[in-house]
Amino acid sequence: MLRPPGSASAAPITTPPGTGPPRAHHSVRHTAAAAPRTTTTADATATPETLVTSTTDRTHRPTALPPLDLDRLPALTAALAARAPAHDRDASFPAEGVALVHEAGLLTATVATRHGGPGAGLADTARILRALGAGDPAVALVAAMTLFVHAAEARTPGWPATVYGDLLAESAAGPALVNALRVEPELGSPIRGGLPATTARRDGGHWLLTGRKMYSTGAIGLSRMLVFARTEPGDGEPVRVGSFIVRTDSPGLTVEPTWDHVGLRASRSDDVVLDSVPVPADDVIGLTEPGDTPGARPDPVTGAWNALGLTALYLGVAGAARDWLTGFLHERVPTALGAPLATLPRFQSAVGEIETALIGADTLVDALAARVDAGDPEAVEQAGVAKVLGTRAAITAVDQALTLTGNHGLTHANPLQRHYRDVLCSRVHTPQDDSVLTATGRAALARRCTSAASNPPASKGN
Image (cartoon, rainbow, N blue to C red; front, side, top):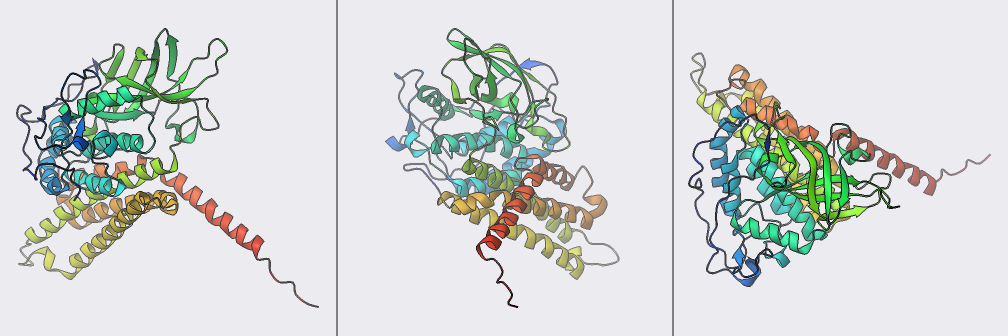
C-alpha cells in the first residue's frame, strides 16, 4: 500500500454532497466547463512533503493534495460500478465518479514527491487503473490521461514551473483533469507521422491557437488541455511543433458533443474546436522543429506507461465481466438440471479458460510495470507486446462469457453487454496491434540476420 507520510487512515467511499443522481448529457454546443469541484480540507497532520503552495496567490497557506490510500480501491470500484450503467445509457460525463477518484487521492497519485505528491510508479498506476476499469472504464480512462501527464512531468519536467504549480494548487482543492489533445480529422493519430493542422500564431505575448481536435477524452470535464499544434512561420522562423497548455475557460474554445460511440460512452471523447484561443507565450511544452515524426511519438518510457496502464484498465473490464459471469452461473438453475450451471464440468472448464487467460495477462502487465519502474529497458521494449496479449485476452474473455450466457449476456439489464462494448475500445489505443506486430517481427528478423552474420555456416570440404 502506498500512503504519503501523515495521511489519514482509510475512509469509506461516499458520494460527494450535492452531486445527486447522474444526469443526461445535453447535446448542445457550449464552451468547455470543468467537472464539478469538491473542496478538500488540508489534513492537520500533513507534513511538508505532502504540501503544495499555490503560485497564483502565495499568501495562501499551503494546501495538501488528497492522501493516497490504495486500500480504498475495492470500495471505490463498487461505488463507480453502481453508477456506470446510468452514465453508459445516457452517455453522460461521470463527474461524481471523478470526484470520488479525486477524494481517494488517485488523480494525483503520480505527482512527484518533489511537488508534494506520492510519486506512484507504473506498477501502482496499473493497480489503480485495473480497479477503476472494473468499476467504470470511462472514469478510469479520464483518470489515466491525468495520471500519465503527472507521471511524465515527474520523469522529465517540461511544464513552466508556475503553470504546473497552479495545476497542483487546483488539484488540492478538487478534480483537475488534464489530457493531451492530438488526434485530428485530417491527421488521425500523429503517432504515424505528419504535421498537425492545428496552428499557433504569435500575437504579442500570446499564441493564438486555431484548429479542431477529435476523440478528446473527457473534454467537457478537463481543466487543462495539452494541444498538439504547429507554429505558423514568420520573420524567418521555422515551423515548430509542441503541446500548448490551454485552460478550458479560455475564450474561443468550444466542445462539440460529437461522441456517439458504442463503447466508453460516458468518456465524452468529444471534438474540441479552437478559434484563436489565447495561450501565454511561455505556456508550451517541447516546442521544437519537426523531424521525420514531428514530436508525435512518445519517448519509450512514456509509451510503456500508456501501453501497460491502459491494458490494465481493460483487464479490469474483463475481470468485472468474469465476476458477473461466475455470479450468473451460480444463480442460474435450469429446471431440467435442478442445480446451478456452475456445477456442470462444461461451464467449470470454460470459466477456467477465462480465468487462466486473465491471470496470465494480469501477471505479465504487473511484472513488466514493476520492471519499468526499476529502469529495465527490455521491459520498456516489451510493453507493446504485453498490450497486444493483454487486450486480446480481455476481449476474448468477455466474448467467451457472452457465448456461455447467450441472451442473458446481451440483455440491457445485465452488465455483460456493456463490458463487451467497452472492452472492444482497447483496440483503438496506441500502440495498435499492427504497429506492435510489425515492429516485433522486424526486430526478430533483424536478430536472425545478425546471428547469421556472426556465425556463418562452416564451409564443406571437397
